[in-house]
Length: 144
Length: 63
Image 1 (cartoon, rainbow over the protein chains, first blue to last red):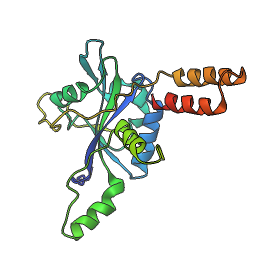
Image 2 (image 1 turned 45 degrees about the horizontal axis):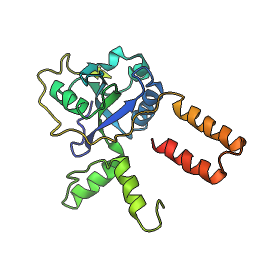
Image 3 (image 1 turned 180 degrees about the vertical axis):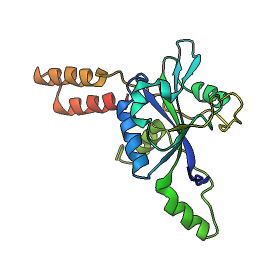
Image 4 (image 1 turned 90 degrees about the vertical axis):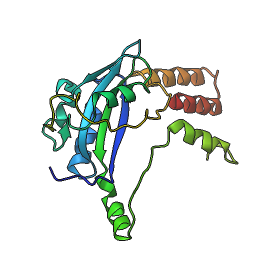
């Protein structure tokens, strides 16, 4: 696998009702990989018990991710056990989720342009949905 | 996908802090649909106006 653009790597947490209900997510990821919009650099399933304790399940053990088995990408090489524990600590007890490390290949053009201008993409963060909804509601005129 | 390592135990940590996640619980399969159906039944019975249905529908999707 070619070396990823290290300015474009992020991790994504996708909560799902249960890890067996990831067929549609796997299908979408496959399409995103095959259309060169993302590259999967690591992927793991996690489940938090009622006591908040986290269990990691590798993708080979998840039947819902079967569609990803022959997709180009890597698993197991980046996220540490401590990373998984840290991510799990933010999940509510009884939650299932996929944790993905992806290269945002869709942003290559922007990264290249930033570098050719002498700059770099140096950071970013997903804004939680509830914060955006609060911000929209607080604007004059309400939720528009 | 190619497995790069058999264990994650010796990897260097990548995450520096807990992710900021939405507090919204994941809907159980069919739960949202059931709620919308119940609301539509109330509209059909004249208990809920169309405007109130829209407000309630928005809440269901926001949960």
